[in-house]
Amino acid sequence: MITIDRPLLTDTAHRLMADGKGLLAMDESTGTCNRRFGTAGIPQTEASRRAYRELLVSTPGLGRTISGAILFEETLHQRTRDDVLFTQVLEDAGIVPGIKVDLGAKPLAGHPGERVTEGLDGLRARLKAYFEKGARFAKWRAVFSIETGTPGPACIAANAHALARYTALCQEASLVPIVEPEVLMDGAHTLAECGEATHRVLHQVFEQLDQQGVVLEAMLLKPNMVLPGTDCPMQDDIDAVADATLACLLRAVPAAVAGIAFLSGGQPAALATVRLNAMHRRRGTVLVRSPWPLTFSFGRALQEPALAAWAGNDANRVAAQQALLHRATCNGAAVRGQYSPAMETA
Ligand code: 13P
Image (cartoon, rainbow, N blue to C red; front, side, top):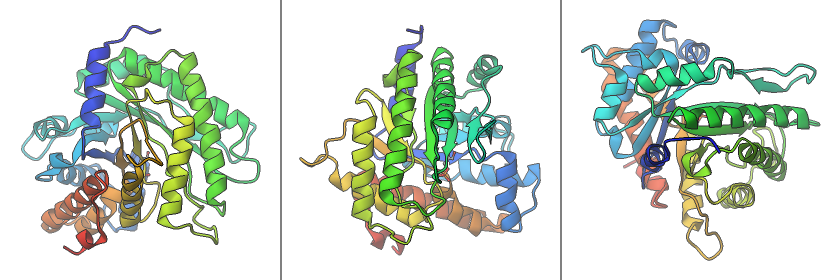
């Protein structure tokens, strides 16, 4: 067992999983952020990225439904126009700052089409520096695609091992690790195939976490929802997705885990909210007694409407903040099972 500051870690984990709140993932790498800016006709510059992220972190009232914000390294050092560190703006709003610490998914040698996430070398020193700069949690994402024969055992084993070593290092550095194994939506696979692949991945991840001696009570899981592939002719309804997702998690995730916060994975923003809400309507019923708090850690499903509203123009700043706040509020309602589509037009 590793020596860790357990009270600090569990306190941070509980802050992140506070009732009615979820996380804002705004940790796009420079490449991903620039790609999204390019599609929206926004200049792909450091100045644009800073302006956009300032808009996000300084959205009035965001702390009512957002408990934590995942930043990219560049953002950890950035300041507002008034020269305040973004981390300080977040803390002042009651939002815990966190950081993405992996260095991205790279091709897995010998396994065409599969990827392994890199970033373990030198991670201990980086985590120490991130903590000193105010980060209190971290994120590492592994990706798995469903195709013929994939995700294969080598890809799952390599990524599960890396996730577990990252998790142990985070706990040693007093950062709450968010463990993100993402089974991608791309492809024509069925809901059942996604459930089977997600189960295999989660099963191995928890086996590796156990081997590395991590404290489950001081970590969060960030999984995909169990969904049919985007090209699957059979698009299952909301209840089927909620049931398949909860069934998969109940079988694979130990009850001691401090919380689960879903990624959105490219789902339309409102649909991600509806599905999250459906899961909460089932929780607490005799049928589904899930042991962990269950919330959102959305990137695109929170940000897309805000980015579209901003469009790189400072005159749209307030409209963009309202768009972000609206999605955060809808998802905050969903984690109480109180979302209704009428909120979209209210
Ligand atoms: P999406 O919600 O857009 O999938 O982003 C979540 C995330 O953190 C990806 O690593």
